[in-house]
Amino acid sequence: MTNTADETGFPADTVEGPEPTLSDDLRTQQTYLNREFEDIHSTIAELESQLCVLQEKEGAYEAEKGRRMKEFEEIIEERDREARDKEVLLSLVANLKQPLAPYFDDGYYIYRMQRLNDRIKSWTASAFKAREFEQPMSPTEEDQLVHLLRKNLPEHIVWLEAVRQRSGITYVSIQAKPHARIAQARHLVALTIWKNIFRPVCFGISGELKKGIKTVMESVYTEGITFPINLFRRCFSYQPNNQETNSPSSWL
Amino acid sequence: MAIRQGVGRGLLRHLEASHEELKESLVKSLDQILTLLLPIPYKLLPKIKKTIDRAVEIKNEMVCEQGLFKYRMVRSEEPFSPHKMEFSPGAQSGSVFVCTFPGLLKTDVTENGNMVDVVLCKAHVELESVFLDSC
Image 1 (cartoon, each protein chain N blue to C red):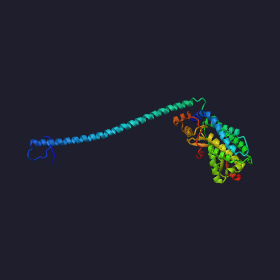
Image 2 (cartoon, rainbow over the protein chains, first blue to last red):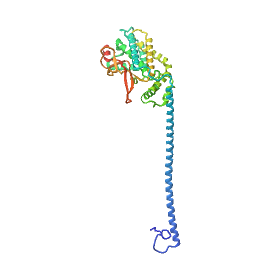
Image 3 (cartoon, chains in turn cyan, blue):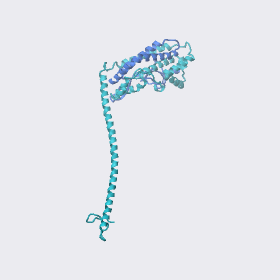
Image 4 (spheres, rainbow over the protein chains, first blue to last red):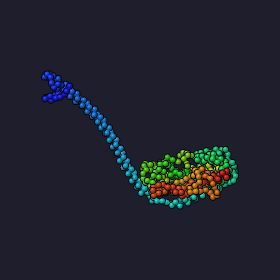
């Protein structure tokens, strides 16, 4: 079937042949119009489908835009908050009553540490130098010692166990010789001082805050003010608490 | 460094109130342990108290400093390093047996921005030979 158009602009099924009647023309036109109508419907359906897709895309875009805008606002807010925090911190530092400057040179601390060591060396030697024990330790006292060491200096028990396994040196053999006994006493004192006083960022600080403050200090030392100000604020509003776990693996 | 110092001072100001109580507790526990190890009766308490007081004083001063100080106890079995450790006068050999006083280090920042630990005080140690000979 050919679909060429005649003079009226309507297509004709056949060019040649008997003259079409009026009803044939009308049928032909009706058929043509029906096809056109179907085509238009099909196009409309297709466009509607495309419109739906576009509307979905628009919805997703709007949601993404909303999310991005929210993020942007949060970033701006955080930037402003940090700028305010920085100003507060700088004003705190500027308003400190004492000027921020080094107190003493290194020589002062070297001297003080040496003096402290000499002091410990001196009294431990006086106290533990005796050649013989006046009274051997009773089993009750031994239990008490183990309990106290476990509670306060478990690292010493770990050390005793390590040297016993490595060199066969026992607690009894250490106690039997004055030099070893003095060294053990000095070790116990040094361990107590190091663990409870020297190692923490500040004497009396809780285990929870130790790590955060250490990070803050090291960060400030190398990079200036780059730590979250909330951490700084926490330092100045917490309650002292020296309860912390004494993990033998964490002390060295 | 000034900020670090400010943080240290702030911390100290807020923690100092609890120091006496904490020192007392430390003195008591150390006294209990050492008294059990004494060969003959000896009044340790005043000595321990003074030692703890001095140690806290030093620490408090360092907390308020601009420098970053570190203290290092030497691990048993660690090889002896003359740059970081020293032992009592006399011939000693072997690896570290026990650390009797922590070393003091200070962190410096180089021109490249790297952090370097400088030894201010060497750690005091006793080497294996002393214990193996005497035990």
